[in-house]
Image (cartoon, rainbow over all chains, first blue to last red; front, side):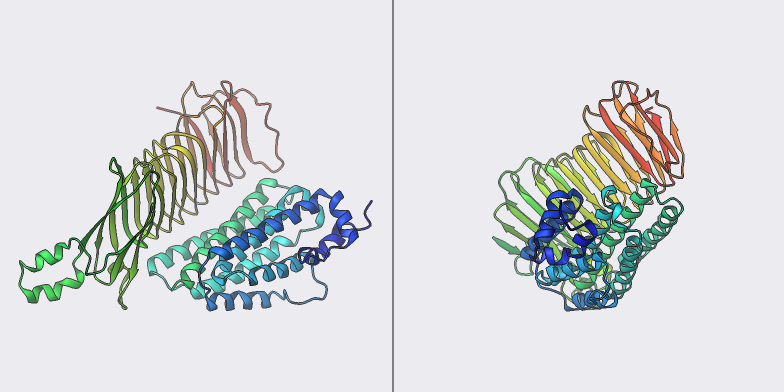
Length: 213
Length: 293
């Protein structure tokens, strides 16, 4: 039986993804399907990011700067009392630092929601992720502010994007309320993460337009 | 092979012809606002790929029997350029702004494109509209506000809009559609796999339910309406967390479903032998399961 439990393993996840793999962590992963799934998901995202990096074109400094500001605002570079999800977010930053930056806009947001979706899987719930949707929502809101500032396309298209962003925000608010009222409702949670995914997709579309100007 | 449709290579310009017929002064005044017509043809082999990136304007694509792609473009002004390139069996068509101070309408370009029926299409169109008929290859269409209309399409069809509507008539193959506020209409559908999700839009589905087919329709609000015939065979789950489910189908209890905690209005059951799988889901919209007229 491994000496490392799930929470301890998840706290070492960033090191694991960087290749620093202790014997205890290896032993835990052999016996824990839930943690193995998380690692597999992150490996998959890493691979996807690598492929995107091989195909995308030149970066947008504006976009990268915006995302850096966002990451700094979120305190992701702080090392004290970090939640393991923050460590993973830092790992993402490392992964995406080798990816051409325009790909980062969509990839970062989609990966962010990917973490949220992974955490929504019933098997992961015992990891005390209750505050995760709030953090996810806050990050998407910050990304929204940065993204809207970047968009300078056809006014009608911009208006359409903003109108639909408001629709998704309203949808998120109502779903969050439903989840708060009944935290065990799988359907409400499913709709909430759908809404986050839609918002991430929409922001990625908007930032691509902003970066392409 | 690369062919840029710049001023030197354009095959046909209707305004140029017109310039010989009208006084020069009038032409100078009118030229920037007159549409011109550009036509290009590309020889292709089986299963060509055609990509179209046209932010503003209509894109109309039809299949024909020739082994070539014909592109006819009409520019609103000379502030927008139309490019077309062929690389092996791939034809790439796009528009780009070439002069500053252009309004969105100045940048409009409308396309009529003829392609072999086995063509794979990749289309990006923010506003304007996309219409495709009789093309049997895979298709990926992304728009913001542009409506998408597919007729007699097959292959793997993926359509993504923000608030553009999507209408698919007599579509076969696999269909995946997503939108935020666009309405979806699937009429006379012959697909074995339909997955459609829109947040604020309505979804209408009428067509065949194939054995082992999967039909997943989901929205947040709005109406989901599915039309069935008495002979159809499907297993159905219809759930609206805060809305209503109205059903005209005679269903037998299904052994494949279990109750979910937190479900508002839900209906589970089988019609005939339950050979297809139908999943309808809404947050606070209405789900109607109605007999086909």
